[in-house]
Length: 303
Image (cartoon, rainbow, N blue to C red):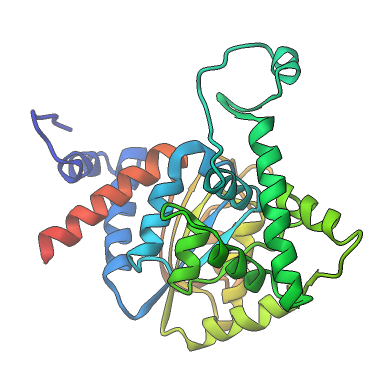
């Protein structure tokens, strides 16, 4: 690889492509595949995000991809939804606290690696989301999870919000593990005195319709866990995805899905035999912004 002054992101990635099948080479392959996916109007793009990617800095990137019609389906953990709303309600994520965890607790600060949140922001979140849930319950008492998240996105005012832009663009958000989050906790608390229930099975009806209507499907998978499995398993109904990019730091030796190479999905018909698959081992908060910037540059250069 050769580094030159004033290189563009794509020029750097192209140099990384000279390293073969090592990590840098995989970043180059993932960038080219992402550009192909983003350009293809006949491909339905599933974006799956697990882990603290909103607190980790990817919120605006994901929101912009939705806003610019590069994402058709979003699958995520309840935690990322919660943190998206936390910022929509005026809260934030911070990097300037270096106390031990017991001191952080005493000061009302929670830690996510080297990121921090203030309990006072969660107090505002709890108050604001309860008001929104109450308004939803006035009109409907049973919704799918994606309908519930659409309604929330429709009621907030934040141009950088993932939920807001998904609602505007009619991009469905599926969060099968929603109850395992602060948003899920507030929903449960609301139902102690009021009626509102989420129908997770209805989500599968909606998702299967998307899958069957799609000419091609590509999955971009950040992290693993439940969102990764939901993205891949829903496409089992059509014989698997046509292409996929996975960025993960999990290992394959334990046999868990999070660290499984994408090729393994072929044995389950979650990826087609001829599917174009790239797995990049590394931190998604580093690699995803890099490959998105590179893919966008490829698209600009060809327009």
